[in-house]
Length: 240
Ligand code: FPP
Image (tube, rainbow, N blue to C red; front, side, top):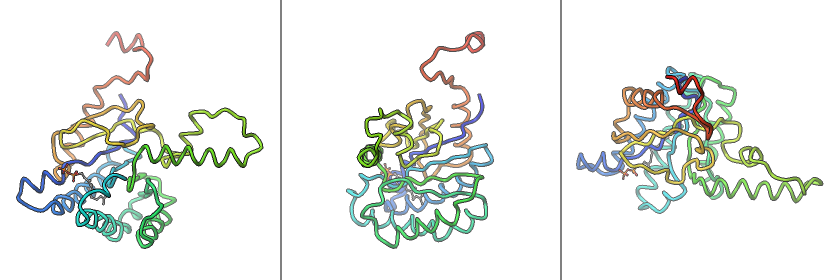
């Protein structure tokens, strides 16, 4: 099977990785940023066109204030430090998630990163920040209601394409492969609509240890899967 075009990752295990080293959780998140760098650099070499990373969920605000501050600081630092490299390497940055209530300087940074890299086509890097899939679906539904109210064609039936196009991920293909590190096996409110036919690979490694070898492990596992999208295996597949 061809490799996945769109890979989405739930980067889990930073805290446990730090804990195992008797270090504060922030140490794990910092090491997690290095794993982000490695992954963004490696992805295009494996034919990955879209990479979506779950960096901060809409539920993560309930973590201790210091940890929230550290995570926001790391996102700021990543964009500050890496934007030139990302732009030069043909990476198009997009941040998905709710924007309401975000600090103005962070909003400004996100918008500048998106504008500067807009025309790039080598890799779409989607950072899910203040992201929750139910929140995204709710915002999409509200958008469609608001549009319908203003439309003369307000009796038209909605299609699934309308919802897809109203989500933060509009224009992106659905993820072919969703990877979660740290041995946990759940979606945690990530891409619920988009993951309808995704393949899942759960790796035992903690996110700070994620590297090219782990990516290859996940891609190989994906290569062994048979994607049927609700249909039956073709005669050719069955003969194999
Ligand atoms: C989950 O580990 C990880 C997060 C909540 C944050 C992920 C953030 C980064 C990797 C750094 C910032 C990202 C970018 C794109 C610059 P956890 O803290 O829940 O770990 P645990 O389950 O072991 O406690």
